[in-house]
Each structure stands twice: as structure tokens, then as C-alpha cells.
Image 1 (cartoon, rainbow, N blue to C red):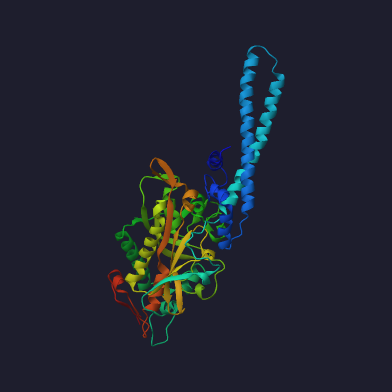
Image 2 (image 1 turned 180 degrees about the vertical axis):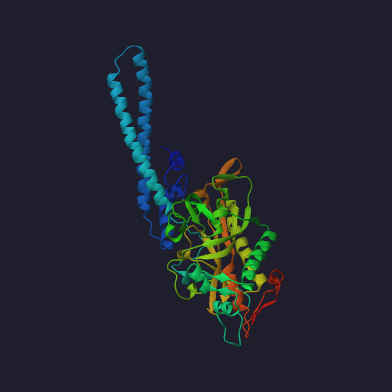
Length: 441
């Protein structure tokens, strides 16, 4: 049986994952050693041999089913002819019944193998791009560039949560009483600063060719599957009880899935979107759990691109530059690092992290992650385009443009003054209506 025909059978059938397509099984079969090396470079344990065995078992079962069905079809035709001329058909009828029973048993085996194969494939991360540095942890990430001057202070600096408390613009204590830890209430100019940043970021990206989207903050499981959050990271997501809905961890999920199950008429597509984001942040600890750096709910502007395969790496560079533009306009010092293979996200083929300088941390902190997923998400979400009368999977990319709360934190820390006030970056002054945030006492 041709592999192409098998693929159609596997991925057209319904299962727990619906119409989900994962990493190309044909690629895995034809490049097994390379795929094993890619998983090793990711420090990911994947039993690819069991995937291949499951695939081969399914091929054998499907072939047997087709042969039995062909026999039944041929015998049924012969049965009708014999019956018409009055011949004895009892033995043939028994044989047909026996074959139908075998088909029923094999159909059950095929269904189990299909589900097993889809489940195995759903847990395999994307292949690492050849340009990604090989490494195990974030310590092996490679710095690409630095921009701006790290500020020097002649007074004892404060972390942003203290600055916000002293200026009466951030209130984590009341947020904790309303909800719990890792939430924050913004007050007065603090709330206006957050809102101003959202408008500034959306305005900047829209002027740069992105179409603004405002999409739901809840999505169904198919959408979470499509962008790779499910099934592997279900424990990290907030699910609405007794529903098929999840709170989004990023607008990437809503916006990328705008075109799931579609043949897109024209590419590229460039979107920017504001959303609240919801993450459990299980396992994070230490300094990052204070203030605005790691919250269970936070605001973010997301950039999403859907492009042709031949353009995706160039578009990744543009995406990264577009995210950097926000920090440049805000005059915040930052750096860009290329993530090593062991630090890549599940769905990513290549990622640049943009890290803003945080004085109280005395280091750079991630504020945007810009990734190329090549056709990984497009296969899962079935996003395609037509070129030269052929249908192909698109490539998808996304990046934060930027995380809003972390930008507030960076502004408070980098532009703090000895008297506790904070200068407002020039590009925000028209939004905020002031050039400095001062204590009202």
C-alpha cells in the first residue's frame, strides 16, 4: 500500500485528536537517524522506534483490511450471480461472513493503532533548525546583540514592586486578598501606564503592517492542540471546569487558529493582538515570583505571521526586529539571544529571546520570545495555501511585541529617580499625559 494513501487514511480519520496532523510521519520514517539526533539535541526522550513500529503495524493492518474487503466485494458479486441461476451459495455465504467478521476485528485494531500513532506523534517536538546552536540549557544560549546603555545610578535602586508600592500605583497585597499570590492591582497612573503601553504597542505594530486582532481569551481544545500546547502541557493550562474551553496562555493560540482547517487565499498574513494571558507557572520560584515578572494573569501584545515556507526564516528576522523596535522607542536597554537546542520550546524550530535590562536583578530578563515553527503548527491546525495548483502547508511564526507587565517593570526600574519618582519615556508621554510619575503625598 502506498505511503501517501496510508497518510490519507491515518489523518482523515476521526479520533481523540480529531483531524490533528503532527510532525510528518513520512519525514520521520525517511530520516529516522536525523530525527533521533534532533531529539537528542533537544535533551528530549522520544521512543521513535515505537513510533515506527506502530506505523508499520498500521500499514500491515490496513493492507489486510483492504485485501479482505476486496475479497468480500468480489465474492458478493459472485454470490449474486450464483443465486440468480439457482446454484448453492451456502459455502460462499459462510466464507463471506467469516471475512466480514475478520474485517470487523481488524477495523478495531486499525482504530486503536491510529489513536496510538496520533498520540505518539502529538508528543514529539519540532525538528531543530540547522542554524540553532547545540546546547543543553539556557547557559548555552548565544548572545546575538546588545542595544542601549545599561543605566548607572548614584543612589540605592529599588525593585519595581517597591517603586510601585511607594508611588501607590501597584498593589499586590490587595490583589492577593481578591484572588491569591502572583496577581496585581494597578492603580491610578499605574493602570494608565499599562493601558498606554498596550495602545502604544498596538499602534506601532499596526503602523508597521500588522492587522490588529481582538480574539477570545478562551479557546477549545482543538485550538490548543493546533499550536502545540496540548496534549503535552495540559497541566500548565487553566481549563474551565466541565467544558472544552481553556484560558489562553498567549494570543498566539487564538490568532494562529483563525485559519485552522483553511486554504489561505494569500500570504503573508501579519497580525498583532492584545490579550490577557493565563499561566499556572508551576515550578517557578525565587525572585521572579515577586512583582510583575511571573504572574498567573498578565497582558501581552502578540505578533503572528503566516507565511510561505521559502520566506519563513527571513520573516523570523523581521519579526524579531519588529519586537525590538518597541524597546528602542522606549529607550530601554536590551539584548537578543539565540536559544540553544536544549532550551527551545516544544513547537519551535528556531527562537530568539529578547531580554530587557532589569537593574534590581542586575541582569537581562526575557520580555519577548520570537519563534519560527515552520510547518509544525500548520500541520496540526491544517493551515495551507495554494501555489502553482498545488496545496502546501504554510509556515507560522509568532513573538511577543511585548509582554506588557514586564515592560512596566522595566520602565519603573530603568527610569527611577533618587526621590522615588519615575520618568516616563517620551513616546508614552502623549498617552499618559505626564512626563514623570511622582508620589502624590
